[in-house]
Amino acid sequence: MDILVDAATPQTGRAYVGEWSVDSRGPDRSAAAALPLLLLPAFTAVPIDPARLRDALVTCATSTFEEVRRVLAVGMGPVWSTACDGGSGRGGGAACGHEIAWLAVDAGLRDCRRGAWNRHTQSRDTDPLIGPVTGILPTVSAELLLPHRLNAPIVAAFDAARGTTCVAARARALLLELLDAHRRAVAHHGDSSRGGWDQERRGVERVLLTTATEGDLRPLLEHVRAYLEQPPAVVHLAHTLMCLFSREPHLRRHLPRVWPPIMSTVLDAIAA
Image 1 (tube, rainbow, N blue to C red):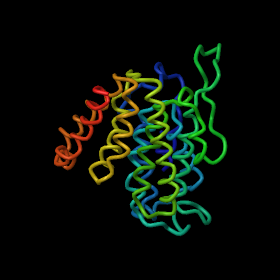
Image 2 (cartoon, rainbow, N blue to C red):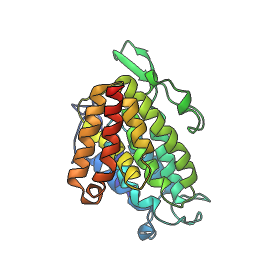
Image 3 (cartoon, rainbow, N blue to C red):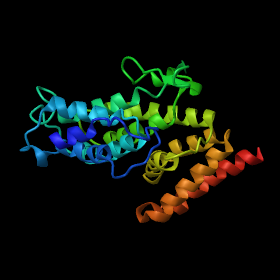
Image 4 (cartoon, rainbow, N blue to C red):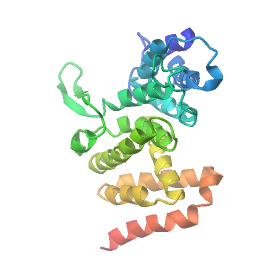
C-alpha cells in the first residue's frame, strides 16, 4: 500500500503540468488504477491504514491531470458491485468501504465551477462547490461549469448507481444532476477539443449510450437536442457514438434501435 500511496502523491518539478498531459505509464496513473482494488473483499487480509487509503483516493480524484481522474473512475467500477462490509472492512470505524470511494467521487466533483481571474497565472481559478453536492449543480450557470471536470464523476456515479450499495441512492440522484450539468455546459461552451478531450468525453458518451441500449433513450436524446446549439459538439457526439458502436460488439447489436432516433432528432431540428 505504501508504494501506491507514494505514487499517488503529486510529483514536483515535472516539466509538463498541464491538466491535459497524457502519461499512461505515470506512477499516479498506476496508483489511480490500483488503489480502488484495496477496497475489494479479496484484499481484506492486506493491512492498510483507512485514513491513508482515503487520502490517496481523494488525491487521485482531485489530480491536476484529467487522465488520473479518469483512470480512478474506471478503476472504481468493481468496487460498486461488491456487497457493503457493514463497517468491518476498509472504511475504518463504522464506515463502509463504499463510503471511502464515494468521498473521493465527491471531492473530485467540487472543482467543476469556474472562478475569478487570476492575474498571476493568467487564467481563471476554480470556485469549489461548498456543502452537499446534490442540489448545488442545478444552481451553477452553464457559463461557469467546467465540462471536463464532470466527466470522471459521471462515470463513477453511473457505475455506483447501478449497484445496491449504501451509496447507490445518492449516486442515482447525483447522476441526474451531473448529466444535466454536463449537457448545459457543453451546449454553452461548445466542442472545446484539445489534448485528451476525446478520451475524457468518451466516458460520458459511453454512459449515455449504455443507458440507451438498456432501454432509456431520454438522456442521450436530451444531450443531442442540447448540442444542436453547438454543431461541432453534435458532430463529436455522433463520431464518438459510432466509434463505440464499431469497437464494442455488445453495443453494436443495439445500433438499429438507437441510431434512428438520434438521426431523427437531428434532422427534425434542421428541418424545423
